[in-house]
Image 1 (cartoon, helix red, strand yellow):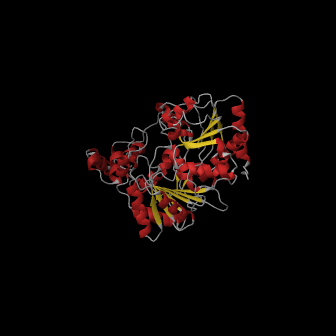
Image 2: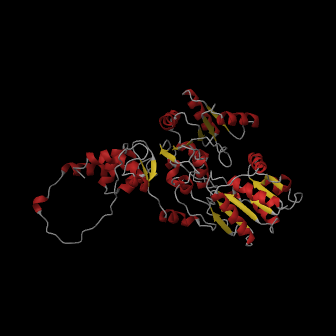
Image 3: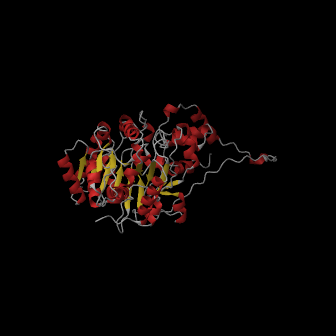
Length: 480
């Protein structure tokens, strides 16, 4: 018995076969997380082996070998004509393995690594297909030297609208000082800097917010370290919520038992470190909690969308405690994918040109695109709170001459005294947000300087920043 593919999946299979028939040696297929790439892969493998041709399927983690083997078996793929191995094993056995007629690479955003290149170079005359949700690398390197054509699947928005992914609610409740994050040579944040950023984290807050917006939901929590993952699991258990930590060092038999208990609902919160990302499928997970900051778009989408597998009447919940959305926007933000490289120095410009306005609700901390807020009459789609829109206008200089009315000149000594006081104040002496505000006013600094310099506010969304300083502005409105 073979799989019944959805129309959009059949379309990917057809396009991939046509590209190979045209003579393309390498074709990359992009399709979002949860869109059913494994079904598409299994169908291509079946069509290939049905003709007596041999398939080599590459995975980057051994846990995925058994999973894809089961998928192939369910779709009547002839396993006698398949080599399903980790990329490391294949690279070490090239001389011994039978030559394939087609190479399929899962999670091909990893394929710039030397082990992959060794295999591709060895089988240079063999056509290859690569599958990924995110053809993107933190170092800006492209894939056009591996693949000559890219097929882009349906967008996340399309999949939600057509009931192939679940709609979601996104909450950002920051519990980290993201200004302290520093990158390693790999491009993502170092564990030490994450430790520093999370030093003020109150573990109970994460549990409290879960109870507030996702109580009882089957949840996957992503932490940056085993120590933190275990602490979060302990905190959930202390609150009477069944939670377990699992990692790559957990014995396989114990891990299998944990996964089964999670699937069956005996465990409500599964805390982990990256283990439950690529290739892990829990269809009835409805909530994700992110307490691991990342600069990797790949990791962000894999983790945030893990709860968006479609089920009727399901709405997924994403809780972002580390402001990952500020760097990567929302899961269904429209993205343009490219095979070509882009230089790091152009990254910032590229992001600014395509910037998407994101708003936060100050009442429930829900996150949405500005256009969604506008369509909802500026009321939060999650809690109904009326959100005040702060319009930032550029300074306009009036160049026309006008007569000075001397009767209107009034010397405001309260303003002079404040300016005097804060002009002579050292930055190191500033303690409160109010101090920072008056220090900035005394020097005619703009709000942008203020946001950039107040500790902990540099990467905070403008909406939250304005909500914070609004009472202070009001207090001194008669002076400044």
